[in-house]
Image (cartoon, rainbow, N blue to C red; front, side):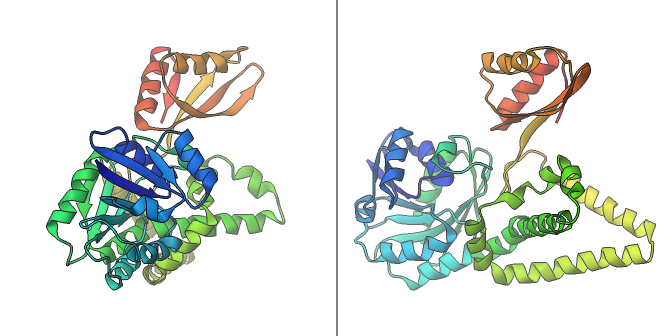
Length: 364
């Protein structure tokens, strides 16, 4: 049997476990320092075995996945370097920064084991093993950042194993990875947090800001709700990249300030046009480092008793998984609007088709 040890079986590690579990010749072991978490891994059936012993999990493992917070990665690598690992064992991680963990691995001696950095570029607004999904990585990019001295044979073995995730495996230099992910993920999180905090400051003297900011503003800034501890560690780890990016961001904002000072309508129009053109060229519904939102709006829902139950029953009877429902407007004798959320694109597309057949007006 090929033994796969996963340290940290939450959303990311649990989804990896589900991709491997039950496959021929693959045996999945989950590890946590918390006995309750170990019980939870087994209860949810995402692993074949679970343990609180790091040594037990790592012993004879062919692959070790570190799916722990970025701030804990170096400690785990140090502990693994002191264990007797199976010759040829491949250690990899799932963190969103790669340069520092790669540098740490280069300083350590894993004997006959190898470290290859990894970053599955998919996620969800939900966390924990309860949110783990067999389909989380399907059609997403899975970045691998091998070191110069990494044998091609080891890289090929890891890439072959990761094909069970149905992700697109791509090889990237660790520093380049941090530059790109800093720009397309870490910087947007900083901007979202700063914008929310700015509006929260205004709201202290006038709560109309909060009342009128619902809806579109909440959707625009949803990534500001990320885990504070996790994002503290990520931003600190990638701080050199982010400091450069923030200088560029300040230049962009300064440019808009000058356009407004000059009342330069043509310049403002040109900026929006340029942004529109680039954004339109982006893959519309491909999985990326920022988790996608699979939501639809059902307009003009009639004010009939039980109508919402009819819609949810229609979806349920057709095995469409609805993760959330939000009544945007519902007043007596006035048609209302519903926002329906789904866990994946497939269920959303099936819901659109089904509701359209039932003569509902649906918008994405």
